[in-house]
Image 1 (tube, rainbow, N blue to C red):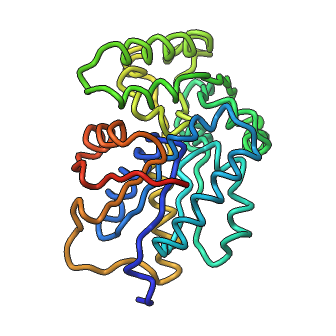
Image 2 (image 1 turned 60 degrees about the vertical axis):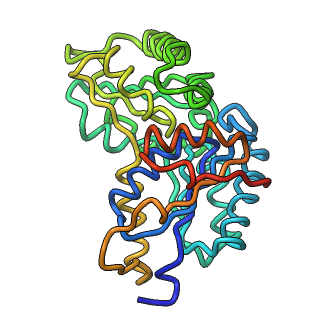
Length: 284
């Protein structure tokens, strides 16, 4: 173990969607400390330009390095990964960096009909990085790509209310129905989409709605678990895995937002079962 082993892992997203990745990271790495930044004050990224997203990525990564001395950074946002992870690697060459991308390769392995659907933000699906990923799999499956304008933002807004509120769930369901309905038939029949890639970390928190709309036979593929496994591999290679005797509890997680505090507290309580005291605001 080297001196960095007890330092935290930094994680960030444009908002609360990356909490789905943090959830997977905590399950894979229960001995680690985490600092998460939800850039809700500057969301959504998916409908912004690359220069804007890159500037936000650098501001947050600089903050996590300077103020929290992170030992690794997980960019838990498809749009920020596509727009800025290469620059971030140049800016922080000493730091193991893990990005997220739509899980097309696992989807190709999972599909039985050979038809894979991909939903994501316009920024992710229109990026050169996504185009290269798609081209690398040419001939291995048929892909139907669907930008979902407003869906991540609707999921983000839903945290402003108690989980029993129905208005936001109705909006999220309507958007999911609209976009999946535009993609063609889902199911296990010949030619139907039998595998759906959730190409935005926010969409994990709508998977129950998607499952209800699409039925039990359609596989939903997210990125959290592969990202968590890759983070473990990089830390292991760097001899920087924490080595406490017992898993850490809620106090091992610090969560910041650049937006309103209460929605973040609602989100971490609802989805990660973390107490409100883990959350603070930050001006970045």
